Length: 298
Image (cartoon, rainbow, N blue to C red; front, side):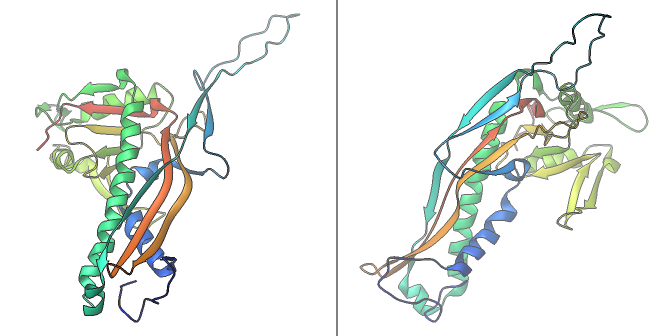
């Protein structure tokens, strides 16, 4: 919704809910969420905290042989716990009444877009921070830049991620019985990945869900964002595993969904859209993350 005098009802109420405004901000925010979509959405209906339970130890174990006359052993699954408390994020933008009166629609729309982008950036930053913190030290390795070309010759480009680095990251994730499916990187690293000599591995496919093109590097989806710190590539499993266990990478816990209000400040003659939410991302399976560090930053 664009602001103009015909679209706004000037009443004494300080905050009015506009479904059209809410829908526009929601649509502007959601496409920018790259990291957040890797986490499972969850809702906190009551209280201030939520406890997540996860299995500790291996997800694929055999069953021991039982000697004749011996009691059948009882399996005990060790569990660990993580407690999460959602926190509040919010932002507002002030639009002078003069702009509304002049019906300068592109400027007004740009204000709303900027508000949506700022919230999307914050959500993405919070998500990538928990992903980074959850990565085990053993799963973080400096890039070698090595790639075996189709001729069998080893090609090396310093400070860039090579196919050997990606294969090593996948092996680290596979050790925990997870299947790597996503690569998160900065535009700088995307450039270097597209310059790999095995260029035929980089291709576009159509997402069966969104029907939008997806860039793939081999069997992994290649996702890029300026929120990802330059110099680091994150190799991710969203939770796919050979044991068919329910073990997602993590959760995006929401206490208050994306909420929009419009505050009319009469003393300043200002229209002030407000955007707030309460959430907390958490990674419950750090084994799903591997990092390639030491890459170029520009």
